[in-house]
Picture 1 (cartoon, rainbow over the protein chains, first blue to last red):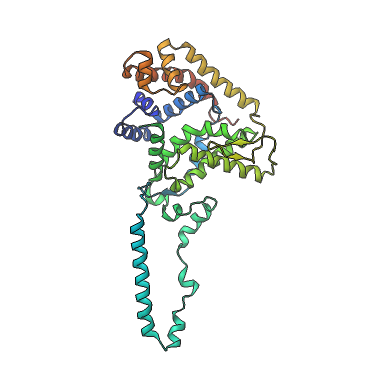
Picture 2: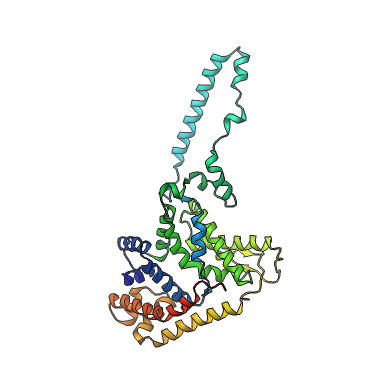
Length: 162
Length: 199
């Protein structure tokens, strides 16, 4: 198996064999040790690394305190076609116009109802629930414009992961 | 599967909640990243702290990584920003006379520190590992030494090495593995001694 690991490191396995090897690597401490040693040897031979540095344990401990971040599976999303985008925008605009005229017709001449229709800030917010607020606070130094919004959050204990 | 594809696979596994996959990326890149950070930060303990922090930040930012650049290039930028924040919080002044460029050629005017001022212990450990690896390579049979050198130092593929050494690819695969195992066997006692030490 270590020979397979050696080939995996060198990018010399097929996708199928590589997936299998990675699965085994994640569940075998001896293989993980070999992974570390082989990479250390490569770094030493190339002379582009600080060989004494080993922060695996510290990082692992730090990550235990982190929520498991689950990202969407499809990473490379195809951009929407311009025609599709235009069609969507036109549909939304049309629905807005129709809705507006319809609403105007029903509410005309009733100032009390019109006053109620003004949206208040409190009705617009509350996108983030309290349970996720601490997570967002912890990650606010990282710019995740849409990435964070797309992430699903699962506490490690809840899923039994890690 | 290329090296970049392998990293991408590990990233995707980590993105699906496999923290162990991220551990493998840490194992792979920690020495290279810390070498980069040593261009900005003098103290060995600080380098390790910032390296650790950079990996944690990278983990938190994994949902934003979509594979448009290589993982290490992305990690590199996080490392640079983490070092920059560290230097700012420590009140260090950038040194104007020396500028560094990142992997994309962008000038980093925070640039700063005189490189490679490590503790004697850290420097000694570096030298011991390097000496052990070099000595082990010297003791390898010539065909193993050639195979591992062509792979690790020249970056040749197995097919290219097979062509250069006039042997089947399977033989190259075996030689490289045997070379790694022989070197690792000589390295293990040293690494066991180094465990739990803080340089």
